Image (cartoon, rainbow, N blue to C red; front, top):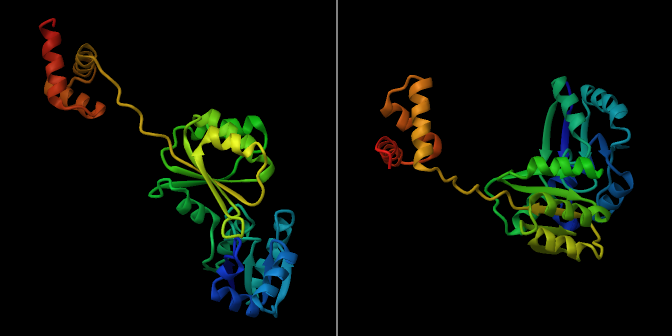
Length: 282
């Protein structure tokens, strides 16, 4: 009988945010794979929990080599608990590789839902939350970062980023260059901790604020690109588009007018009037 892989969310700041199931899993798991075993020890002490299983380190530097070992334990029936320093495993933290390997051999994977810096920052930002995209950490090199931001310039959804304190000022400045100085954003710092701070404003304003130095864990939320302004089309241009469809696609005039109107988001009457005006030379 195979075991179970449990992905457990851990507090992003306030220890009392730990879900009750996390305490049970920490106390009963056969194996605990932790991003930082020292931070895990501090967490269990704060929660008053004594793990009974093996505790192994599982971080970016050793996850390739340690994943087969954990999969073998799972195949032998172990309940393996995966925790990171804060938040949910796999979200810009170790976890994806182990989940992928476990799924590949038919291991059950479940989760203990917990705090998430992404959703917490999004909710507190004051920006639209109906649609969003998580972009993780931006590339460290200036050129790579600029290219990534250029690709996101027209993204209509609210964007969520993680960033390190020593890079936040230059990243905000790069965002201002790519998205525009006035694009609304929020810098969420030390979420759920004693010195929690939410700084809202345009990207250029936030970059200037961060230039003096910002400490702590940081999540940045940036508004999506505003809708493009509707393009103006002259009557002559509309008539030309209709004529092209008649000549190249062999469409009847009524069909061509309807197709042009649908393509440009216009009323059919507006396109028809343009065709009539062009025919009479007015």
